[in-house]
Image (cartoon, rainbow, N blue to C red; front, side, top):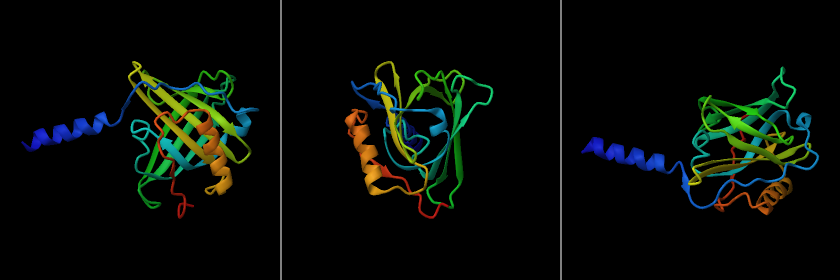
Length: 192
């Protein structure tokens, strides 16, 4: 009985990793004036909206950063995206997932992969200033399961209310948040 209940809970949990619906990934335009050298380097995630599947790695994350590093041997914009965070608290366990950004076309739009042979997500920078970026990644499986994330990034661990509102408003104007998910602040206080 106990084993059956645990299996049912596990299956329910796994099923929540996917949002089933008719929505699919959007193909938003890349940020005006995008250049790789403006996006490369360290970013702090200050808020995000994401489906359960998109949140699988990040569900317990605080102190989240992404470090975009160009692949030195590549001339086509290939990069690594080093996603790091702490589990539950600034003193929590360090967690890391390094993705590969490849097949950049146009500049600012890649395919992101984490494991060889696994499906890749579309990864697009839709908004970019010197201090703020909005990254949208999305993957769809068989047209039935769509997972997406909208990340609001800053070059510093904090962001002005106005800059954050402008970034979120722009992402919303593109229709990226097809499930109307709330944006959640990412804890950065006490991390650095």
